[in-house]
Structures are given as structure tokens and as C-alpha cells.
Image (spheres, rainbow, N blue to C red):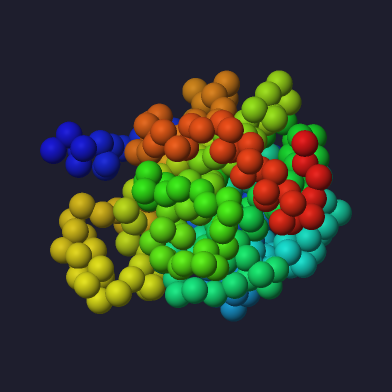
Length: 297
């Protein structure tokens, strides 16, 4: 029962974010939207980066109304298309004076096999490659906005993941669960590598498991899996509860000097052995740069 109690442990902070700018990917639904509402209440300028502008429009109204903060905007970002990512970043770099918090929250989960505009398998493409490129393109601005934080929403599913460098796009064999776990492991390894590269810059990085959250990500589960989730519902989190660890990583003053770690239920958590493999983290970093045609030492 301790695990269940911890799962719903309440953490709260009255930390303010007045004068700060926050970008949240996938902010039009689920935990992304709840994160936007909470951080807007703290006085931050919120940029909701969303693929579907129609959904984003109604979410924008909701976030403004719920938070009482009008300094919330939407901007189009399709993480499955590097052209869209570059356009979004170019716009941010031109229009914004600072980005103090970047929350890489958007994701796809156990979807049927598909490819991004750049030919990446959809889950590794959106969940890892898209956010990797976005972070790279915004990093100079983030470094000029210190103290700053970069938060990668991963999942406990990373514990079942392995990185297949020889077939990162699962072209030889596609198992949607394995591909999802691989992408979530990539999030933790990316956070680890990023933190090392950002030492002494005033920018810190965090990875987290939001909990098993009742969100739209369940839409690709088969009937049997959905039935299991339905039975497990009392032990799952609402989007409000699921957003708490993201908010914790974004605002908790005690994390100011921490970087590169993994969190769950608003506390440091254990990640898998594979998620602490620095050699694999480096090889994944190099492969990601190569596939995205960028140089990021």
C-alpha cells in the first residue's frame, strides 16, 4: 500500500514564475494542458506548442480561463516533421527574449507502424528525435535565459526498453510496445547526456515518469489492454495528478543544483540499468545527430 500512497503523495509549492517563459509541447491535452494551467497560475508566459491548431485553440481558452493569465499563446509544432520543428524554433528564436523552461511533453504511445516526414519510426521519431532536434535548436536561447530547466517526460516503460542502434526505426521487426519502451529509454539517456554537456551553464535537465495516467495516449491500446486499464483505473492518475511530477521538476527550488536525474511521484526515482549506460547514451547521441544531420558535440 506504500506504493499506492506514494503514487498520490501530494507535493505543493507556492513558487512563482513571474517574468519567466515556458514552452510545453503537446500542451493541448492531458498532462501537457494541466501543466500549462498550473504554470500559468504561477505567472509564467506559456507557449503551447501543438500539432492540431483547432484543438490548441480550445485548449488555449481553457488554460487562460482556468489560470486567469492572458499571457498564454499557441504555436504550431509537428514533432513528426523536422521542417515544422525548424520553423517553430526559428520563430521562437526571433520572437522571444528568453525561454526559461522547456517541457518536452508531447508523445505517441503504442501506435500502429508509421513513419514521420523524415522517415523515422513514429514513436522514436516523435518521442525522441523530434524533441532532441527541438532542444538543440533552442539551446542557445535557453542558455541565455539562466537559470533554466529542460524537462523530458519519459515513462516507467523505459525499464522494458532496449536501444537497437542497428534498427532504431524498427524496420526489420515492429513491436509497438517495444518501440514505445525504446523511445522512453531514449528520453532518459538523452537527459543524462544533456546534463553532462550542460554542466556549469546554469541549465539543468530532468527526466520523469508521470504515472499511469488516464489520457488520450491509451487510444492505440487493443481491447484487452483497454480492459486491463479500466480495471486498474482506481490505481491510475488523472491528468491533474499526472502533471504534478512535471511541475515539480519545473519549479521545485531544491532541484536547482540537480541535473540528469529521473523522477517519479515528485521525488527522485530509480531508473533501469540500461538508462544509466553512458556508452549507449553517447552512441544514441551520435546516431541521433547523424540521422538529423546536425553537429552537436
